[in-house]
Length: 457
Image (cartoon, rainbow, N blue to C red; front, side, top):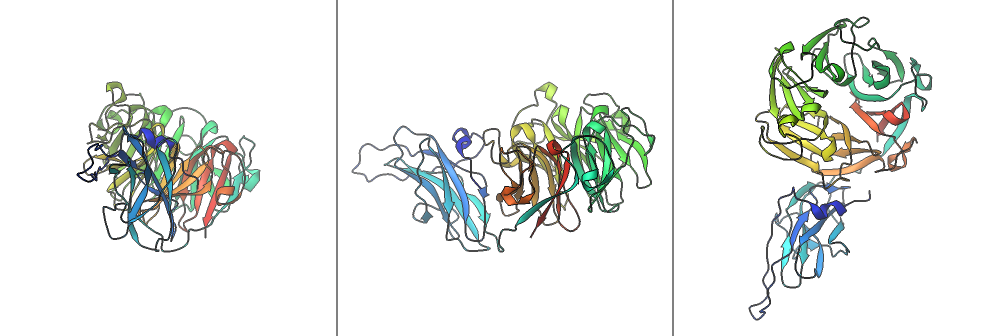
């Protein structure tokens, strides 16, 4: 995968480590070492290769050598370990690490030499794969590129802007929000499409046939089969029981910001939800640029960020009430319930929120590393901690627990429609992603009005 590192030149969010190496005492014109940053995640990690890179942020003298250095034994590698010698014209570079050993942890950091001293970026740790990179085969299971509304099987079904999605293991099917039809649709793994809810715009609780939504977005399913829906247009979180009864779980129906209990709390265009094993529901409160929590008893609190109306709009990794987001649009929770992964769309980043204390960090990307995860719109996680991210510029990305990132299907900034393998497949503004029990990946291909399936082999 081609790496795009030009944005790193202006990177201000990574901590850098600078180690100077003085010239001999006989040299009188000592210069400070260059200030260097390292790409914050290894990319295209295979059994024997990986990519990294770096940038010089400032230097008063010409850089004479730069690249990355790495080691499996030295946790702070230097140019005396394995290294690349790269070329760049704008003080940024991309490096290919070769000759690596499978299933081995490596430490890598960028370096630059200005003739009198060497500066180093932060150390990034990653582990090579112990198996070959899987082949991703993309197919279309439902819908056609023509927008509309029709239930049916395969290409006979029609969607109009399929967006957020979740796999309901008890129903054995996907639930998908069909944006312009104002519906939650059901799709079996065989591509049979139905309608779960009433498509009339409004706000009413009741049965599946009578209850009304206004712009349903992200969904999640708890251990007992309840489905929670971010009803964005109504500014509430709705609950659908396994028997088809729809109620309001939290929110007044009026846009705003207020912690409280049940219908006494307020949200502003909630976009996504995730649920842990204890029944706590977490909300990406997009309009407030905050992450909220609803206990199983309906008590709403704020765990990260602060209201956009009070200045809480931007990009900042920090403690709970200080951190900033910009358009949190999707979320997933790990198997332990300890970490929330947030697709922070306008920050071009995947953020991590500790559910214990609300501390926010960045896993990948940033407002100035805009091509690392592109424009993330959907995220899901498997049982072993692999993250799958839909980048609306046209890619499906995997981020492994070993700090490796690579494209499994599609291509950056290359929209289209094509089934096929790996980077030869094309998507058009993917907005939803989900995993079934067998590990197959499903994508709501918004611009193509189709549901795609990715099988890893």
